[in-house]
Image (cartoon, rainbow, N blue to C red; front, side, top):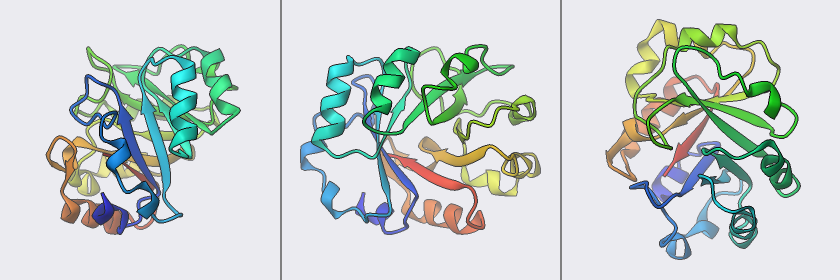
Length: 203
């Protein structure tokens, strides 16, 4: 974790989801969170946990952001906004989700990921050309199977010029095993993207 932190990604995500091989629920107390540079925003990643539990975790570990990957309601998001900025994830298949407008005023960022059968990432990319239809001003994180090879993909690089794209969310394509990052690959990716957009690593 500290090796990745030394690369100064803009965000570092910590997944609290028992069904994920990257779940940190039982490990978080042993992680050197205080050793992270202040410039890195710590993100708590939740999937449909009770509001009180999410609030307690955010406060206990001083998370700077929350990322929601479940069916959390607009009211749920609005409640958490009183504590930290909220990143709400939406799965994409062949079009933008219909419910985006309902969440526009209750979260700070959208996150677009590939829709899978279960909650969480699939390690595969959706058709990024769909994002040309995104005209809202709400900034978004782009996730979904982003890998080192995307830096050489013209279509992907075109997406990175979208005016509302705020950050890239990288995860499984930069691992040697679930939760174990390839530091060299991430370093090359961060250096190769010319400083934009921002990068979030989800551990």
